Length: 570
Image 1 (cartoon, rainbow, N blue to C red):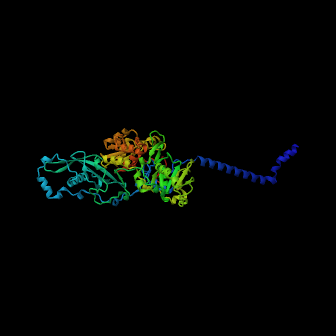
Image 2: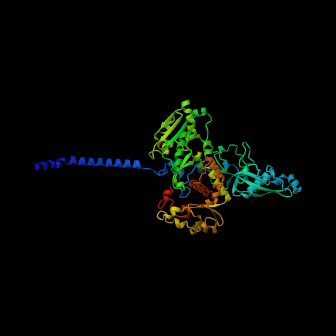
Image 3: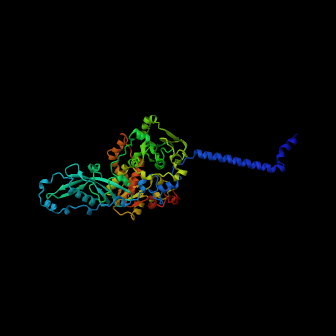
């Protein structure tokens, strides 16, 4: 029996069965590898979560949000780029600048001047200055052009009475002479004017940036006081941001029930984009806006933003932010068809049953915009699930749709309130300053990835590097992540140094910015948060006449760590 059993068990290894057994073993091995591969792929697919939509960017976003240099600010994704960053500063768009020779001088008035010189005005010295007098207007224009030599003037508004009898307020539009951004700026200042005993008027002093509040608002249909090349009444058609104008970012309202019924809407609901970085948020939002324009529908947008922890002091994601804190909503609503989500649902609940309004629900991002062109329902709602990254809004614009949906970047500008702070800081330095960006912080402490950064950004090294780049005595704006700005005190012997916090009065509790933001936020004060700080710091840096970069000019270390310079520059 034992012999038969052994013979039976060993029968499978007979020579005539070896080929069959080998094939069976090989088949089992291939099947095992297949099962293991499927399991590994499934685990990776279920757990994979990209840090950012820019992690493996498409060609379009690569071209838009990256640079061919290793520059700190140019390619830094901390502050997202917006439409105005990519507009060419074409002088023909702005018109001709106003020069001193263009202003009619008092001397050209001839006989009237001689008559005034001959008069005895000793009894009229304290008489109120008539700010509407052309003589006063010409005098104020000439004084402004003479004092502010680093800007081009494009329009002067008619002067108005100031705070007392010797004060007049006047507004103007301008650009820095070496400005690189396609934007106009508005300033309005207070002029103190005196009258001598022979009736001669002179400007005693010109106030600080935005000191002439009475001239801020121009009445509707009022022609500007003087501009060399009139651009027409409607500045909105020029496509140029005007920083310093009053901001109207109130929510758009549907005029009537009939208008609401006739409208066609697109709404994105849910998704995993919440609390992501600002560039992730904007890349997804622009996909939604692009699809709405492609479908010729109004985008129903949620103005609330969750600010990512990378921008907050607490290190935690913060809810309750508003789109209008960071972007120019007035420009968006005037250039595209958008509605606030809260207002939309209020109108929808009032009228959809009564008027038979219908919804088309789309729960798969792979349903392309092209497939929805024939949808007649009043509302198309894209509903996104909970599994990342398939619940990112920008997935709608990938694949086949990427060549069809055009993200309308020209519709998104930075907040004009934040840009007005930038303009105020530059104005306090008379738009005549150089700038340097000094990266320290965590990178300077990480010697493995940035072995030379700490030494290359020390005060001694900075003085040595800058001496051939920045002239002694210049205004030098230092944008930096170094918390203790006294670290840079040795530079004060050579330059007039300036830092962001030096201008905190522009956003503190008593500031105009704080007042307007509190009003916008329904009476609740708004923090000048990390993203706002980075945005303002970056924009001031970019307005320097000379701009010195950390990773281009101060150190040979690579922006993203050792051996990454070639990839950063590609």
